[in-house]
Image 1: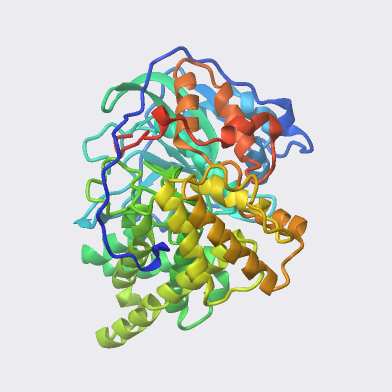
Image 2: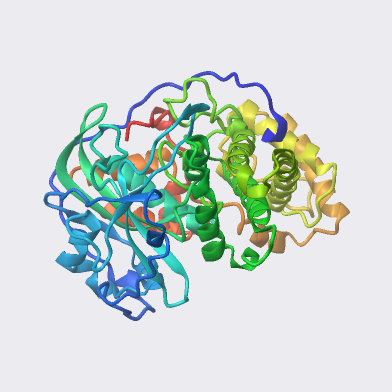
Length: 536
């Protein structure tokens, strides 16, 4: 029952529950002193060294465009730890001028904002031109550690690629992206991050009238599969090499002097993508919109829209209620990741060889690497989640058996794996603390007997040590939809305390936090079917 080779796409549609929204009064949330403990201020944003490498590509890769002013901006949350990584003086979190920059009301000093053009396959259908319809690159900076990071506003108003839309994001989706990108980072998943979250009473029209939000996203690069697709499919193939050279030189420097650097880079992207999705699957994370324009050329989790962490395990779980056919259901994510890689490889054929037959042969070889890399990566993670030292062929059956029990009982994915650390090898008694939520106890107890035997067969009998290892890979806390929704509803009244509380909670997802125990519980029945859509 592992999702690696599933083929059926049938699944019952979950009950619809649109997230509620209310327009409320907003107040600025202070930067809490505990967020600054142990850190020392760095540079003012005015003095932070710029490193405009992507900007130097110029048109046609991106188009200069100013942000649209945001009325009455309020700082919902400022990410002090990330600010320090960037080299920012966190005392400026309260600066009205910095707030204006992060709201899109003034440009970053000495940097002209721009929006990138790209295309993509959306739900499998080719769309010849997309682009940053509500995002702007506002700065490229050099950090104290020597890394180059890009800062991008999301929700900063229309661009030439907005296709007639307003270019805004709603506070609801902005809170979800802010919380999830930081939660994923703490879980060890490659991801874009967020520096700030700004709110405004400006009305934004979606399924209902909501209020605006702007996040400042941070990543080494926002280059996507869809950028290569755009130039390939639109007959502008001369623009492929400069973009690829930029990505390789800036982010894969160990490859830049190789004569086969394009093939080597694509091979690494395919490998990173396969490993990334293995992480998603073993955390129960569903992206929701795995379009090729939402896939990173660096193998990062990109564009948090209608995502969701599963509560009850269902291999056919669909987190996006706009995904009517279940294209991006949980079980389908590995296959879609490989398919998206095939689109990138096709777009890059001119880089691989002047001879079409040879280019296809090289691309095919790279494509075929995905499945074994993914298979090995996910099985390694599954056995780590079970606390096993070794990876054996028979472990596929062991993992499938556990997932089958969870699926039949609709048991909580995150809690069920976390509770396995309570199983002891020095006893044949039922696993107290691990079985209370299980429905099929007979099957579970039989599986536990096999699990204990497997542990003993490799001498893995130090239960305390095993529990420590398991609790470093099986999180106690994930961003469940009902937790995010509670923070959203409070924020829409101007109360940002719950957003700050969740940021602190998810910064330590593997740790026991006794005062936050309720946040590890499964959602109550009335909140189990919260769904999100592409409307944000």
